[in-house]
Length: 236
Image (cartoon, rainbow, N blue to C red; front, side):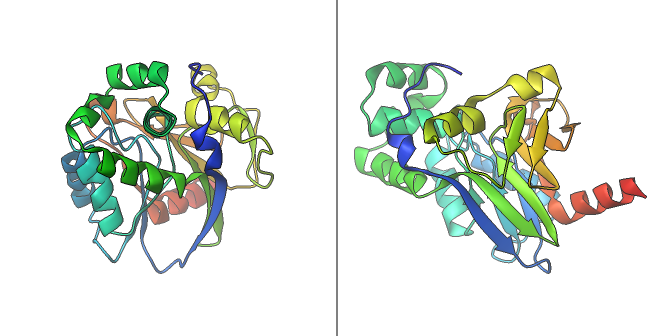
């Protein structure tokens, strides 16, 4: 993890539980990097229906692209859910903590867009992030699914971390699981899905699914009903 203070972000809920009726289509998308147009194209390819289907984003919605504010507004308009990523962490500490070291790091890593946005709008986005969560435990179609920006090699979704700072490092910054391709444990869920670590195609590591393909051209959108069916059929 980069040495970024976890001050403001300590106010964010570590995990929230989301229960969605299995009659509804649920889609999960990886890192979006400030590209609303990229998200909408990906959703169209999957047949996503606004205000009917449900979307969950895995963090790093902002930065690098030029549409960060428009993207957040779109997610609000369609009543999407999302967890925070490390770039949302950088924004929170830069704007609300006024941490100049973090602000320089954020600006040089895709956050320069904020110079063209008025403070009231930046504050509004940060307040939205503070009401969000670092992870979601989703109950859907009789299956429990963990959703977070990233994950350490060992995690228990049934037992939240008592230390929010540790959870921030584990759920927003950790790359150990992806780099080692070795998973110690991922308990309390059938499987989990994550972004953060760039990959040309989505890959499984144990029962963790990694879908951050945006660096290689376009984001991956997963239809959870199809993914659950594939996993069930693979057991037969």
